Image 1 (spheres, rainbow, N blue to C red):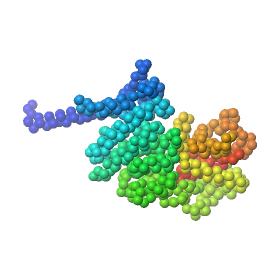
Image 2: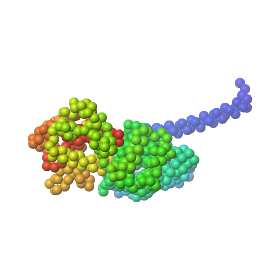
Image 3: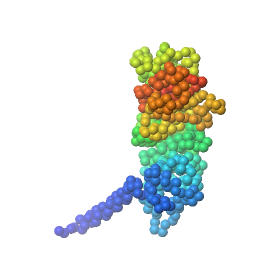
Image 4: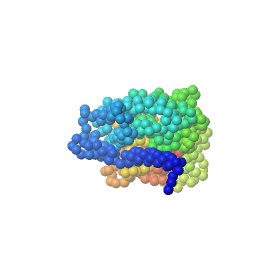
Length: 520
């Protein structure tokens, strides 16, 4: 049939539009297949064997096969990314593949092997390349207007690269966080003053969280948590981290848990809060603006808002921000005021359990009577001193404890926190050293069943000694350790103090406060 010129014109336009759509779809399918098809991350070893670095076995095999003196892979890839080309720019999917290589290698390789085999000069070369890329993106119109950019794929490896000590140390040395701060501020300076995209914020939040954890646990000269936050603030990125944290993340994943723990650790740094969060300081002004609704994401989750409110409250409690009171052993009710502490009732028999009302005390008796043992005045004094020492220890090393507990749970076959026990020794050893008070504290984390089940020979020697010399104490410890009623996120400590004094103290976070559950 005959076509009118108008019909032919529309057909041509539709055809062109369809071709564009198909071309775009094919491009994204290639990118998707590259991210899901591990064959794209196969490398050939010197012996001809092909391994996939997207797996732990492949990443370790790749690093074991390389010679440190000849390792130039990072610098070779950077040269490939930056080398001028006669026929246009390097294809985006090729760039993405190279960035994914860095990320997969960092994620799957053994931490010690990664540090041993990859020269610092190679990581520095990659870091300098990333800094230059971010500087270019900072002035990119697409980034400023939308808060996202295809070029931002250069940031992807940081979710895993910052699991390692050397990249974190170099990030501070090379001024990476200052560049990153300008990058985020450029987006905020746009016409709509919006936050970066969820994807970018999740990457940056993970990088900061790993920075805090790695600098306090894996550096040769480990930093305190306060020093890690102070370094981030000196670079201007701590205030940006507060903003980024307000952008919703997928709840329940390890990234979400890690973000909550790092914000909790910030709340427990009174020196940082008093100096860096006061009125007129960038972090203090940013926090107030976020809580006032004039900054951050409009879709901030209630849990993150509660964390930020807790930080603001801790700042207002001058001189008491690192103190942790007692909560009701039944309902967990907790209060900051002195009047609340005075109103708490304790068990008249053991004086170790506290309650907010007689109703709670009566309701808890069925559970509490299993571990209710009369204390002497000396026992009460020692127990109070032991708990104060443990609270101070947790305040200083909380991030490390949670990080190592998570790793220990994975290695034990996916056990929950309440199925593990943290053993701390505050008793002088033969060399006159307190293991738990060393610059890098000695922390032992074991499944509870190692203490309550199995043969006597398999248990720690000191645990067997307690069984012989103090059978009542031993029975009470075993009952508390075997108690399965504690919440899944609770932390159980076996705490040695004095000649033969052993305490089992269980903590759980309730309403952003560390509360002690019934303990011996």
